[in-house]
View 1 (cartoon, helix red, strand yellow):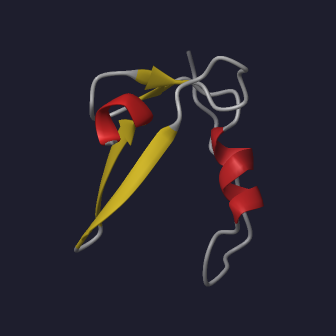
View 2: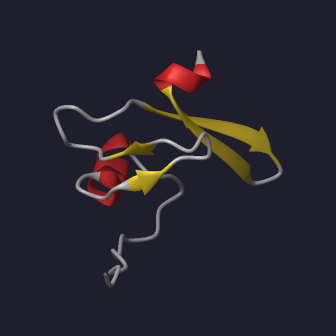
View 3: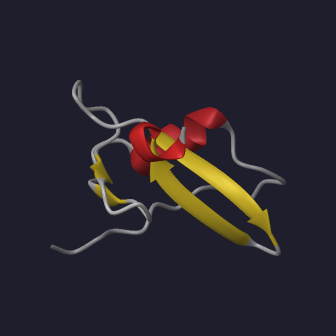
Length: 65
């Protein structure tokens, strides 16, 4: 499966809508080992943690709470 790069005009930050466009319809492997498909009715909830220094961690709602 070939992943296409979505081109978004450079901004100081991404909006929530920009993030939705990037994620919806893509199956995502989270750091907790579960998967999520944003935009799907039965998808896991994605939690994104910023750990500082440009590092992020992802997990689902079952593992994150």
